[in-house]
Length: 83
Image (cartoon, rainbow, N blue to C red; front, side, top):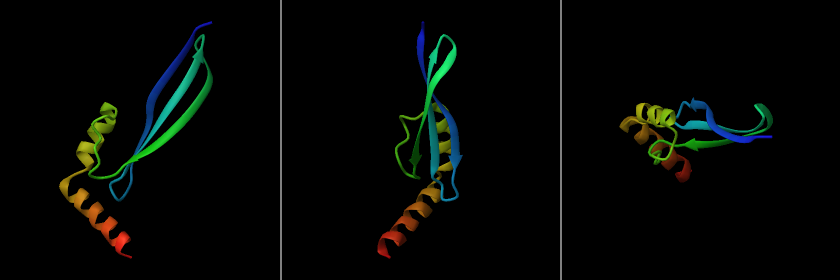
């Protein structure tokens, strides 16, 4: 009986305001068959540090989080906190 834990980024979504939603899947395999699986989601907001992310997530953040997107996101957050 061989157990194996596999963790992978299986879904990356870019939301209208520039936030990037990342879903990570953790699978436990026994002799080549999945016996358990869970998901975890986290969000990367424009301007946040994404240096510790998966290579594909880094590439999408780099392309998406431009200076204008970061500025627009920061402005929208300032408006929400002022309200």
